Image (cartoon, rainbow, N blue to C red; front, side, top):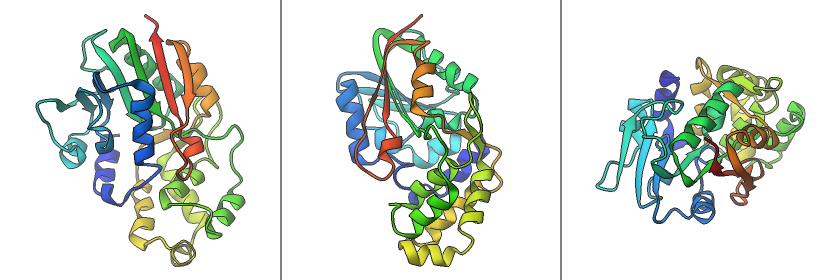
Length: 264
């Protein structure tokens, strides 16, 4: 996975919503979690979230991601190298944990559950967490409909289209997983003429080319439905709910999973 994220770092400035959280999604974290006086643990180094909380520790396993996209340590925030499933954070020591798309970066349901357990372990009794989801539909999208929707101008960004393509091919429960290289293969099958896609959508070819980062990736993503993720989280939290993150493209599949009352 580290090699995969190192490759993503090289194209970070070409990425956009929903892969990166827009301002309305960032505002949702603050509104739902009341972070202004909180010590926050950030899963990953998403720069849009780096200003949240009174103090912050960001945890990422990729040194390249930390060096390349983290906006920098200050007296109030720092980034450390570490694994989300074994957080380098003392138990019951933080007010809030946040993450953006991090559940989809885990290819197995057992890993998602391990992450919920890790988050519950580091939170104080009155702590809370918010994870923006990339949640697949209950029934996978039809590939032909996704192609037609994109070519008709119905998809806001190439990055929204990546997720829509991925959500046509996810595997069965409980994992709802897809190898990242398969996303690229399915994209090429649906959109073999990138010039046509560029003309029909107005997207620049270098932006469309960001799909090529996925081509040789060893990573596996998952796009479990929101109902599945809520059910998994309820084993580790007594209060689980879903909050809207706005109206940007695919926002309806990118809600904030809000977690409170961690179970020990």
